[in-house]
Structures are given as structure tokens and as C-alpha cells.
Image 1 (cartoon, rainbow, N blue to C red):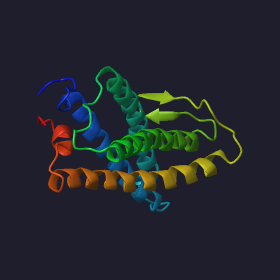
Image 2: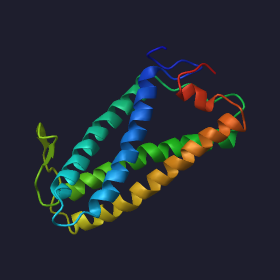
Image 3: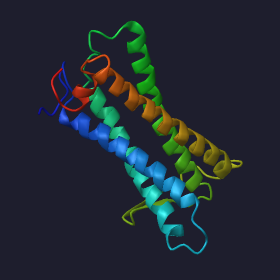
Length: 183
């Protein structure tokens, strides 16, 4: 399999970034749901949020890399059987996923840095609190983080169902290209 994207399929870098981000997003969502239900005496009460933040900041860096890679190695064009509305829907959907991911991660950062304290990343280094002390920063960012996370996970599910529809009903190469197979 090739490293870069071609006119007929995605390269392995794009594929690893795509599926790795998807796994991280669903994992972070599950971890977030689980950790907010922990009681005061749980041994994970501090470790789960620290893990969530560390993975979230790592995902932020990976998403920056993903955007850079998309510029260096553009995705293959839409299959010929996709009409103008399907192409527009795909562009808008991908834009929402990218922008939404960045927005949910920025909101998470704003929650964590509201008190002016940096965020340790796996105990290796700390990301400084560059923005803190905004009025109701943690509360507002928390609401944005929560609802946007739900919207992203639901939309990612719809994104996956659309890929399955293209594969099994339309019988086009939409899904096989993201699996590294030739169109």
C-alpha cells in the first residue's frame, strides 16, 4: 500500500490517521461518560480526567498533523457516481467533523485551564494555561464540550452509516478507498 493518497484510494498515513482519530474520539467519549459518574471515593476520580485530558491533547496534535497531511497529500476525488448534492454533503460533513473536533478539544482545554493551571500530559510535560479567568469559563466551556461531544459522536455514527450505505446499497468505492483498496 502506498504512503500517500492517489487518485483512486487513500494512502496508509491517511487511513491510520482516520481510523486512529475515530478510535480516540469514541474512546474519549466513553471515558468522559464513565468518569463523570465516578464518586468521590473512586480511585479513578483523579486519574480518569488526567487520562482524558492527556489523550485529548495528544488527539489535538494528531488532528493538526492530519490537517497538514491533508494539505500535503489531498484526498482522492469523489467517485464519479456522486452527484452535486452528495459531494456538497460530504464536504460539509467532513468540515463539521474537523471543525467540531477542534472546537470540542478547545472547549476541553478551556475547562481545564479556567483556574490558570496548566495541563500535564501523561506526566511528561505540561501544556500551559494560556487563557484563563474568563467569566464562567469552565461552565460555558463545559456545556459546549458536552453537547458538541454528543453531536460529534452522533454525526460520526451517521458518517459511518453513510459509508455503509455507499458500500452495500450504492456499491461504490467510498468505503473501500478508506480501507486502502483500489476503487
